[in-house]
Image (cartoon, rainbow, N blue to C red; front, side):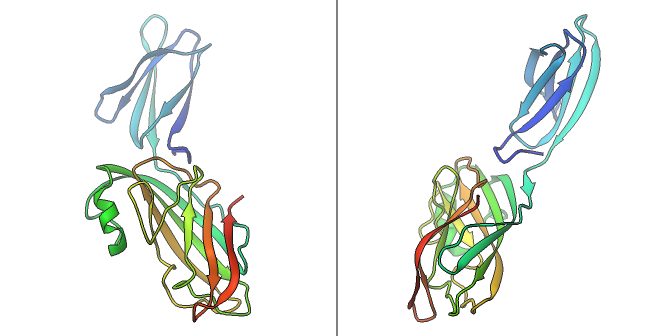
Length: 225
């Protein structure tokens, strides 16, 4: 499986003096002849797919063929962020994917349409499933209270003004009020032309507002530690 840094690492152990090469599923060499160090090598693969690592002894004979399948990164951290006023977020799962731009892969939300047109033919997507809890004695209204995800590199992913550098579609932002003491589950899809990570995902909130847009708490940043 890929790591959250968008690559997979394969460890090869063989006899001293062994060399190796890597072929993809089309039998094309993607990493040419390389030498192991004392019979060991760490091979980095930057895309999902099926590969074969072919190891050869120092006399040129094939000594080992290692099939490798690399899947996209998935994790279920089930961790809470810090709080902003009465709001706190539990990150239940994350999924990273390199995507091909087409209508089937475009999120079903008109707000992302213009930014999606500007994405490269291949772009990067992270889907975060989360739960937001309102510990206030007042209802918090996501139609007025907007939270914006932020990647580890500081890139913001706006649902209101998305761009090809960072756009988002959130299933909770814009919905009805979250009553006192209640929680709501949803997801946010983050899209970008550039690789990004969310190991320490942040949600930036300008202000926590109630049903009539009334002030409940000042804004801040909820961060996954």
